[in-house]
Image (cartoon, rainbow, N blue to C red; front, side, top):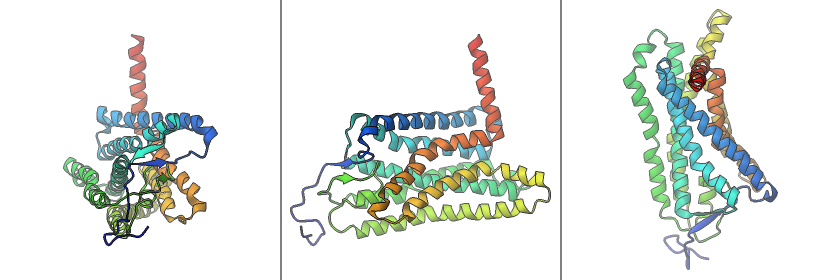
Length: 320
């Protein structure tokens, strides 16, 4: 099949849907996988909405740190809902078909929410930097107005780049094959199926993704470099533990998210590593949104105390 001058193959008839292979090779485990991912999805939604409810309803948590945590939990709810419902439907019914437009929509929201999480994690690390390294000026610097600007900027930062990528991708043609060897429409797996020359799209995606993810990553690393340096200068062991406890939950979340995300794109792109790509993708797309609320709940004293108050109120209300 020879390409024409506009890189569209001759006799190319665009396909209307793809087949998402997912975990289709594990034929005997489909229902078990469905139950496992259903439990994960329920825990993810329940955990993140609980965090949002606690932050919104409790006056003690109306601080910059918990305001950003509420934004992160809200984002994680949308994030997991972009991928898991489609995966659950496929595992339950065996229907692995997804329309080309549906795949593009999933890719759009996935890219938007991943970049948003990068910025939110950077904003949260900057907040901890000010609280630990500039404690006397923290109240004046991290005011309500700045908090709103930082949160809004995190949500809006990815809209233009991902929209530009999707607009350019709309000119691509898909004539076959139709199999996507993944459980969601990830960009590398999606673009591999395009007919004709995709170098321009891949270059644009690489540049815009780098612009949208490297700055928050560098900001996060820089913030924690200064935070750790400041904590190590605290003379008392008790003081160091207290300072570190205020950012340990966030540092854990950052490590899990960036560790697994980078593993997916640093691992060799060979067929023998395809299974590992899927496993690492599960970590940052499925498991991380579920684990984040648990980390903040179990490692954060204020969240635990306020959660206990809410539970006690509900138990008291049931008695009456």
